[in-house]
Image (cartoon, rainbow, N blue to C red; front, side, top):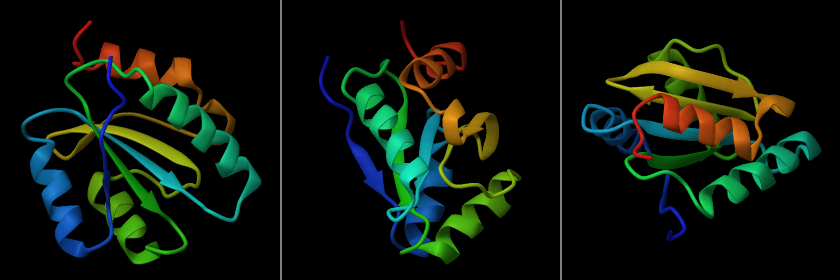
Length: 120
């Protein structure tokens, strides 16, 4: 499989487009703090997952320090309490699964994607 393309969330328009995209397919969002060691470990797990993800899921990244307002807007619009690091899988603007900190592993991300609509 090919490495997944990741949508960078950097503007309010990106937030709107990401939520609109979730009407077509599940979206996995990773919220990453570029200054936190725990987030760096979770980011390594995210990168390992992205190396061979199940088909049928879009992937996005928001850097919580650099784009704090956007990260908080996504948490509010998805109805998930903000955490960092955090992975949120959503469809139709509604969360299907989420995890934070040490619960973000390559295996957990893959299981969530497969359970909630990704192809085999």
